[in-house]
Amino acid sequence: MYDVKITVERMPVFKDLADKYATPMGAECTAHKVGQVFISKEYGMPEGLCPWAWVDIQRDAAVLASGGNYPWVKQKGLQFSCCTAGMTPVVFRLERIEKKRTKK
Image (cartoon, rainbow, N blue to C red):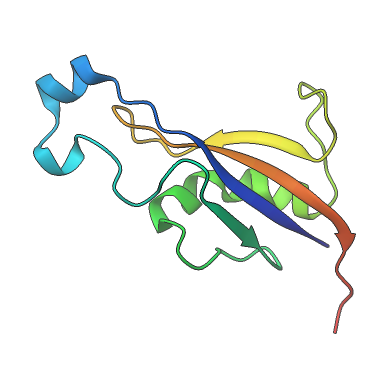
């Protein structure tokens, strides 16, 4: 089992959609900032990570934590994943931390 580093990579806003459909609360993500880093340990949700985002990215984090790779990504132990907030998604870079955890 490996830990997974989760970095907020990008936070695009589809302004045309947000202007037309979003309430002020939904016009942008206020939970995260670009560059923010979290560490998932033992397949768990990192403290401070938005629970809605975790639901969307946890499968990709679990694949990396178990030693898996994605054949469409050039670098082993890497994946990009995002929350499904359609007007204001947050893109996360997930990286396996290559120091393997030992069971207690």
